[in-house]
Length: 208
Length: 104
Image (cartoon, rainbow over all chains, first blue to last red; front, side):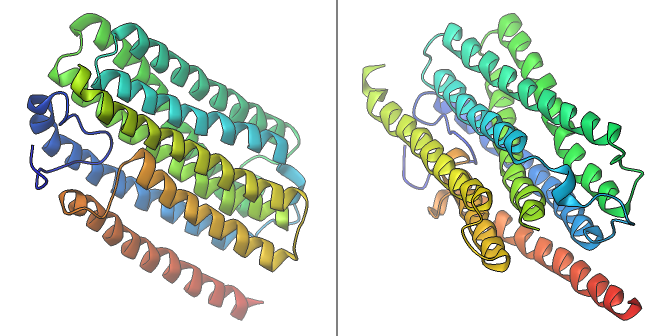
């Protein structure tokens, strides 16, 4: 192992499995490219939101529909899930047994589903109160941005289920390890987008 | 297995530190808004500043992006994407806010 060795984003396997590491560098850089273009999609949804922020058309504004308690819990769930995925990556890298790996992945899945449940509850409450995406430009932009992130978390959760099945069926082979590392990047990336959402959308809206 | 216990502890520490920083920064931002510790413009600046710091914390501790030569491709890609994002988001906001201002 040399200092000049190529590393990729996320947890690298070069200490414990140099063979898998060498195979993973290219695919993970490719996935990183995808994530950066995904970031541009989110950035433009943020820009749309910024432009339409004052377009409430006489309907409810941000301070009327956001609840800081619910947002704080969603933030905590997603942040905790980022950490538990990190623990899953470590269990995978250091071969601490598939039992531990399954455990951390299952906890991550539960936290992700808990986040989705709370977000869905907030959305249905808003729509029932007449603050649906068809009410104003502001609400259309809000739902477009936050629901796109929610759909990403949903895809991540489906992917988690697929990974648990893949580990059960194939064991921790090279392909499964690479897939897990890709999912890790995706999951941590979604948490970064959420930092933008709670700062720019929710806290900004609650400041007024 | 034994020889990896050092790197294991180091990498575990990295995740725990990341979580601690993230909790601290998130908590500070929410607390500042909850208790209205400053006037709205200052508060907004504070929230955006803390958010930006937290994004850097996540990139460093969870995604392991660093300044080392071996990971510089990834960092360059982030910086290039940031440039594109600043151009597109900044341009959109400036042009459309200006249009809005003129139509008022």
